[in-house]
Image (tube, rainbow, N blue to C red):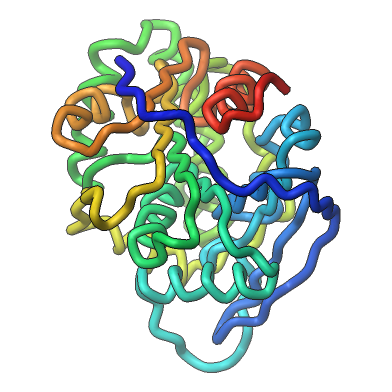
Length: 299
């Protein structure tokens, strides 16, 4: 299903940057990493995890800027800091100012796409295009229920057996003794058949060296308990691209297919050999689709 919008237009600076840095926000050290030259793409979430997932074929046309959000950042000992979705938006705005960006493509994967949408609604003049990858268009409860239904209906018996084997290897007592961030990663890796098209994929290397702030992570999850996903054209006029994987059993594509008729027009792309992370699972097809949508041609 595809609802097309007009060909996106926006700034195409030739500025090249390949560096890194850190912005100190109240209570958090937010890192960023830059790769490539061209149209600036600000990619939210982690400056460690996400550079490992986006194809290098984008580097010739796009300036990819990967920035931390608080739950995947270093913690600063500045006392207790209240963390809200507004805090996240202000962090992104501070990072934008530090990087000298006027207008840019904003990219969010999974719930980071919900944060991207919140920022874009608050600062619509800054966002030339919005890209949501594997982003749930509803609250946590609705996402979990849809995921369970999609898993029961569409997951193969082989995939279900692989999940059972992976979960059986988890030692709950050992997990309870781990720091919360390490326990989260262990569970994520064990549940790989729900996240990846390749049901045997080992995601552990993606998480190597990723800092996890447990307090911020809890607050981040709480953002979406009573979350309402919506926007109006008067709030946000930037073109929106939604990218989903056919084998995403965590944020199933059926969620978007049921919501598209009620939302402003978007471009919807469904990748048939992907799960929750199409940019890593089908990198060249993803890069080609993104660049064509941005009007930049083929990678």
